Amino acid sequence: MKGRIHSVDTFSTVDGPGIRTVIFMQGCTLRCQYCHNPDTWNPSAKTAKEYSAEEITALIVRNSNYFAASGGGVTFSGGEPLLQYEFVREVLSRCRQQQIHTALDTSLYVPPETVRAILPYTRLVLADIKHIKAEKSRQITGQSNQLNLANLQLVNRAKVEIWIRYVIVPGLTDAETDLLQMAEFISPLDSVSRIDLLPYHTLGRHKWELLGLKYQLPEVDPPTPSHLEKIQNALQNVSGKPVYILH
Ligand code: SF4
Image (tube, rainbow, N blue to C red; front, side):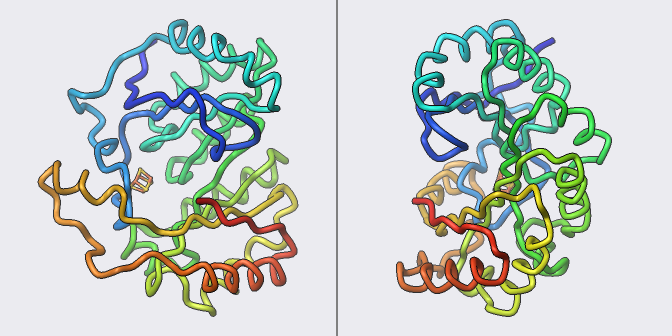
């Protein structure tokens, strides 16, 4: 079995606990306006490389000294890693046999059967919420959020640990009422152990231009530290979960 992989980062500190090897899978069906990896979208892009489950597991195991010392492991990201869930499941299964901590960074925009199939091999789900309101989610990603939110509840019921990831884009994802609605949605989810805020940045903009795509958010500036802190406090108070700002 082969997986199509965009790239590999062997020393990440922001994609789950500890130091992690992150496997960025090729292909995504969403089209987030703020995406900083549009080069992962096309599942058959010529720039992607094919690896067997054995090859990619061997690469992960080679870095496992870092994992052991830092409490880290492997994270599958993308693109959308669950579009190639059979390959990812095979590698995660091999990693579990080697006692390596396994995480998925996913939008959960996939059929529930896919989520059910991969959860037994997953210790942590980094779950993106794009927006709590369906119509704004459609505006941001091209799709409603109903499937993602239903799958998030499915992961919660399965008692697999969840870290929520939410991108703060001024004027698009930071309205106070929307944030409070999201916090109220998250509050009763017992498997959610933290919320990570990702401040919007423009570092991926040049990739859109290189791919001949029109960048969707030309006038948006990144959020200020004080604005982020205000959001952090509000989310923390209503959700009852620890909220972190990632940079
Ligand atoms: S889900 Fe991720 S990779 Fe896909 S478009 Fe959105 S930000 Fe980009």
